Image (cartoon, rainbow, N blue to C red; front, side, top):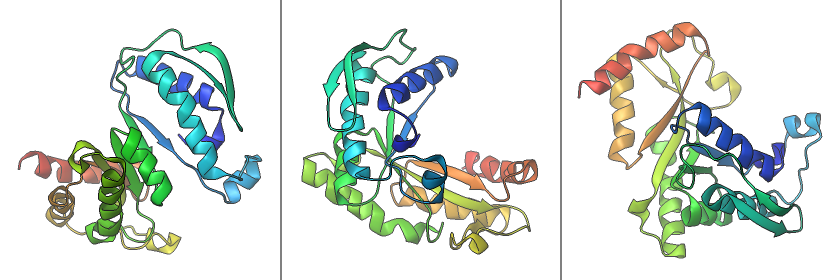
Length: 221
């Protein structure tokens, strides 16, 4: 969920509800958001993106961990707010923060169970080396063991002969035969990545079905 799209008090309530629906399997992914055509079209605020994100966490974290908060800030407020009813992961819901840039990554290093980023120039493993190194530095800056935080990357995969990722300016996708795709995904694990968010392209049932043998090959090793 992107912070500018809704008030953080509502975001926390949505996360708790989704955790209930998922019977405790929900991972709360929360992103800093950005400016752009979508923000303009919907009329969302585009100023002070980092400051709004930081303050939203000041509200969301105590709500998810303790179930209550009071906050009077520059952008948001909450008065004696209680989060009820609590979901099955009350107080322990995994927090995944999608961030980039030094200040935002330090927030992730401080608070997140899992850090996340996504392919913007290429989905190949080598494209993420710098970001992963930046996360290590952010952890050191805040006094956290870099091995204590999960690392999740969103990558585009073209498992069929249909292409299109590069045309959208998203760089080289992961592609090739079943074995070649599986081998590329294994390289992420060798880099210390703990989670992969696979975005099949095109986004249709055929692409999903074409990924099935890739996952089967990974499961077999």
